[in-house]
Image (cartoon, rainbow, N blue to C red):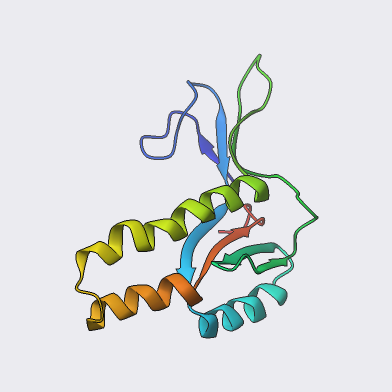
Length: 141
């Protein structure tokens, strides 16, 4: 349930406070694994999932429409609660456009067109989802 703000690995924001963090994962996922993830998240009420593919198809589970979620925050004496990291679905969509463009502007350029590697990168770009998963149960270890 949080660590001291001067913790050598997780601490931030000065001394005499406590900092908290929710579990967060962001990655590209195949359509087959996307089905498995949506099934898992739908069975865990503390989890949120937000995903989008190259075509703009969105999947949202456990989220309020356009709800911004705190991922990290800190509580310190004589200060307001600090919230340096959030998940914002609108910002995620902007990042997704850039992330998907990197598959073609950067990764595809490393391989010969038509090669096995080039085809794999093309497949990921066309069909995979960029996924963000948040576990809001930050108390349970």
